[in-house]
Amino acid sequence: MNRMNRAAVVFGIAGLAVGAWAQVVSPSIVREGTGDRRKALDAAELSAWSSDALTHVSDWVGGKAPASGDLSGKVVLICTYSDWYPSASRGFAVAERLAAGKSGEGLVVIAAHHAKEWDKAKKNAPKEGVSLFIGHDKDGKFRDAINSDQDPDFYLIDRAGQMRFADIATESVDAAVKQLLGETSEQAAGIKGAIAAAKDKADREARRTDAIRSNVDTRNIPEQTFADPTPEAYTNAPWPKPEKASRESSGENEGPKTLTLPAPGSSFPKDAVVKGRAIILYVWSPKVRSSYETLLREMDQEQKRYGRDVAVIGAMADVRDRDSSDENQNVDPAKLIEQARKFAKSMSLEHAITLYTGNISGRDFSGDSSSSEISIPWVAVASSEGVVRWEGPPSAPAFRAAIEGVIRADPGVKARRAADEKYLSEKK
Image (tube, rainbow, N blue to C red; front, side, top):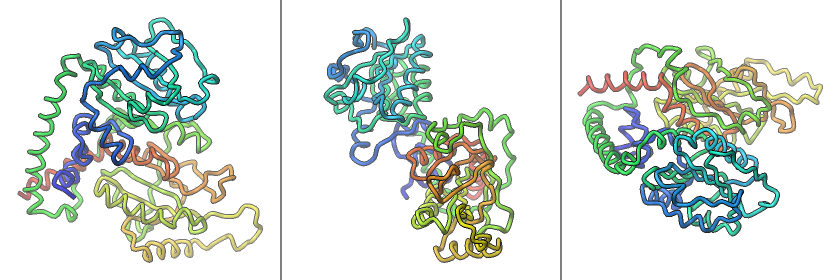
């Protein structure tokens, strides 16, 4: 762990933990992509964007392609989508909604459909006054030009004509659009100076943190006393918007659910400390190999990765075969508890393992993917007051973004971090 990351553990400088300049300025914007492609996208950010890439798009709905006059001084949202692919179609709906609501504030939306099945795609012409341009990337060359890999991909150009956000998560689009619409052309043009100042400030904070850490081992910081945030603080926090797919996969479209924490003394190797922490509760079963073979150790890594900012809890479910009349399915709760304890001990797990006792309100689980119940493994990401902010399978790409989004927004996490910082400062 380098100096910058160590500072993030102590003080919660989320941008420094990621290591990219843009995260210092815009910590709520989640980038997508990995490896060399992500490096190339990062390099493209803050550079002037050429509208020449649009020459690869054709068959513009309504016969009108965006001209330079349509884009000058505007915030431009680019969306690649495929009408036949559900998640990409939902991504286009986000772009379409923003065009309808934000065109008057200076937003222009350009949506480029995939080469396949353009003839079958819905092509509703935008209403008068809505700056929405829909076209066909018939050869895939537009996607190549912007380094797009999978629909939907979102890119944002600021009022100064710079690529500000390259390939961001769907749940980050609203926040990114809001940020750029709130800037003037002059402010956008001066963003590099603002970033340099932010990085300089962060460097100074990191150096101060290193000086403190030389005297204090952060792993052994005792739990600090601090006041819980008000209900209003949680209500007004900028929580990440849940992926619609995660709710659809559960068969429901309801409001937020809550977590019931395990009773004291019912977890192994020890109870999870949840005060001032986001909560990751995942459901697994010894009867469903895919839910424990690698997942338990992966979740242990999540606990180590996020440190004091999260509490990971593995809830073991007693999955039963509905088609069986075997009375032996009624397992003694004491035996279930012992089974959970053995799993935690044999795998040397550091995070809490307990029994699933309806911890996610209203959720029942099954080991059968064809069941009307939810198939495990399943994971819920909750804020520190126990409200579920995201849920879905742990393999979902949005899972990691949900963790980081909740940590950034959670007033309880911020309060705990402030208490930790005060303790460390007094140890100088």
